[in-house]
Image (cartoon, rainbow over all chains, first blue to last red; front, side, top):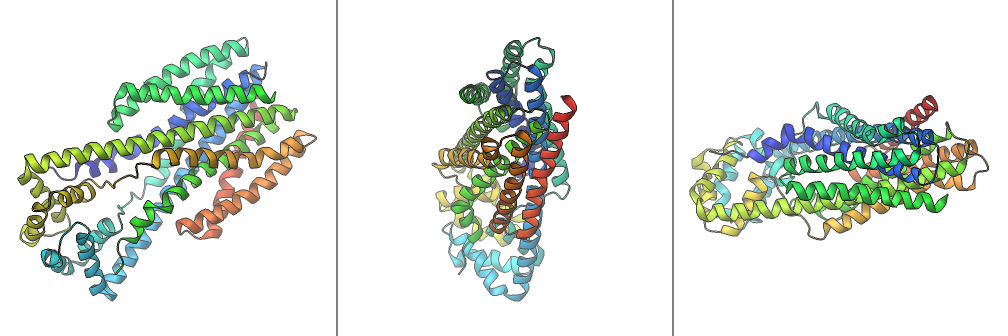
Length: 231
Length: 231
């Protein structure tokens, strides 16, 4: 019998894949667009490289730490709501039982139809608490190790992604040449990344690939024109 | 009687606040860190301004379009799962009924205790489908207008946030002076933003304020050192 396969998937590989996607999406796009933008405004490759590496450092730290704090704040929120449900189940069990019935009522079930389940949950406080967490509040138990792993995964993916568009500038004899190679390499990387990402999320892969390339191209084009305009 | 207040909150102001937080977190942090990093490596304010504006353009487009596609892909995923549940309720109703019982079984409820609810859901296909979406798959109906609003909110918040650290460089006579004013203004902005953000998410406000300042300072410090090292 199939048992909540989507939720289980969400809790294992799903989170890591999601973190890689979060980090690499921006890591491939923003440093590429910044470098492309600067290539339209400066002639020294070392300025592009300096700005690009500074952006990769700033972006990976900001996104990684942001992910760390977000995951930790999710865990704290869950713990405080869990404590509140436990307290309410002891202190105001009738109110809590009415809330269970209320959850079902939103699905068109009457009090008569649900009193059996309500009565059964009242005899099992732990199951009752977990039921309220998930079905009343819509919260799922976070993985305690997730915050650190999430931070490192996002930051690492951002840095790896960011080096793809920057690497060509290290070897280019002129900024314009670096831009050409960088644009080619990054478009291929964005295409492959968008394709794989779509496979993971269940979207049509080719559409995902073209969408990802489009985002990168639009961001780079806007950065290029703005940098040109202000120089 | 209180009815799932957290979920309702999540569906209205919560999403917009979340989008502003997503855009402004990175918008205040990354352009600030990039400008600070470049300030350690170049002496011309216009290079810092050019790179900063290019970054703001690239970042807001990349994050806004990313948010747009993520929200649209959520909506598509929901629609396809909804169609699947509708089909299964018609084609394999006994399997679906067993899945309802299975959801409850993970909360320690026996088949006897839940057969009333299962029978009641079987008489109401729409409620049954919605119940499966939420309780078996953990999916909530996305707002159809959310994708565009989310994109514009994230991009706008990023651009507004990004102008805070860059503005001082427009008026500074030297890069070093711009950096000093930018750091001061941005630290105050990060503190205020972190404070307000924590108020919205229910975290301790002062801790949120200091954490947000810390992320900005670490990102800027790392960008500064890397830019120095490669120049």
